[in-house]
Length: 246
Image 1 (spheres, one colour):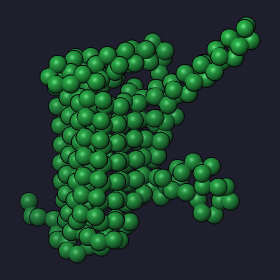
Image 2: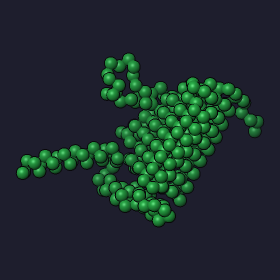
Image 3: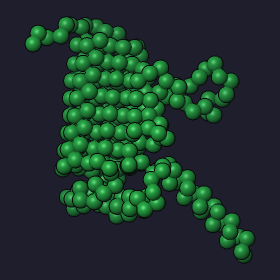
């Protein structure tokens, strides 16, 4: 009986350690318990009551959070100590905000950022910055194991997918399932005041200039200059113009 009890205790400890590493990283046990209590008690509550309670108690788990931030139902938040949120941010139902990684700075959401329903913004040791008024529609994914930034006022259609990293090494004999998937060609940058249609994919290391339009379903695998219209798989620039005179 004593041996069985010890084995069960070790198994429980290991399971908790894995859960803690996945959800909270190096966050102290007290902060972990606080976050667990806040999310468990208030994360699921529907309607105006739920919005009000989350607006009141969720700020307790972040290092920096602005005024009038709205959290929808069942939002998943991982490594909250590395997530910084500006004023008037809206995070809709079932979104995931995950800043996991060792030594990374995490995620910054600027003022008036909107994260649509079911969208996932997640790190694997990288950093993500969404500048003010970035609008991320529903069912999008943004992944970073290096650096990914989206400029102010950029609009992103539903089901879009952006990468910084996520590459595997074809020359390495290690099976792909055993590689980290963190190879990268460099930071991924999307300029300010862009419009990216639904189901756009932006691959690792790509830079898109300011005030660009990327047509729906495009696959962007190389840089796009300022004031350009690009479309296709792979995307190519159909039209570009000079910066407007000031």
